Every structure is written in C-alpha cells, then in structure tokens.
Length: 151
Image 1 (tube, rainbow, N blue to C red):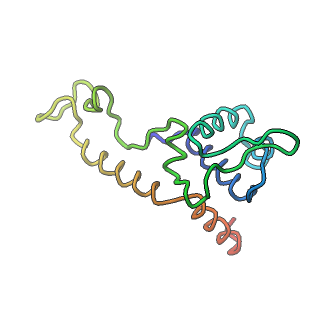
Image 2 (cartoon, rainbow, N blue to C red):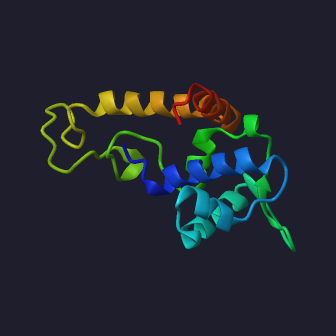
Image 3 (cartoon, one colour):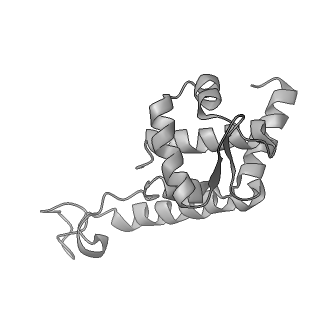
C-alpha cells in the first residue's frame, strides 16, 4: 500500500478539525499539540487541503482553519488525494501504469507482474471504501469508541 505519513496525518488533522472545530476556527498549533504532528508539516498539508477547498483559512485574532464543506461531504479518499497521495496497491509506473517492474516473469506480458490484477482489484476496493467514508462517519466512530472506553 502506498499510503504514507502524509495521507495518514492529513486524515488525522482533518478529523481533529472536524471534531474540535464545530464551525469555529482552529489553529494548526492546537492540532499540532493534540495530535503530535509537526506544525511545519501541518502547514504544508493544509496548504494543499486549502487549494482543494477542503478547508478555509480564517485570518485575524482567533483565526485558524475551518472545514470547507460539511463533514459528511468530505470523503477520506478526497483528503488523501488532496495531499497528492495515490490510493492504489500496485507498484506500477510508466505510461498508463502498465509497467509493474522491468524484466517481470509474466509470460503473457513481461512488463506486468503475475499478481498485477490482484493488487489492482485490491486498490479499487480500497478506493471505493475510502470514498464511502467521510469525516462525519469517522467522528461518529471516534465518539462511540470513547463512550465504550476504547479510546
């Protein structure tokens, strides 16, 4: 899987903003402190999230960031894509992602590995799953977990 720290931190920060913001601006310093994510890293992530319209910045005293849309309208997949994270399970590269690895042992197509279709399908399922989840769903799960004492 190619989900790196960038995607995980972006989702974590957006969930924090959704949970703690409730329409009021939240500073990146607050998110940084609560989630133990570097402030400079959050600044980079939020610049990308802002360009995609997932957050809006509020200037002035008491400023910070607010969600750009309702939590139920922001999919987890959209957050990950906004920070330039590919959501796929193959390691394909090249033109139209047709080359898994040079010199592959697949007798039918030497540029594709023999498990290419398996990982391509896993990536499609993962993408559909992340599209089906939104911030409101994650927030509800987080609250239910806290009520059960899991968190």
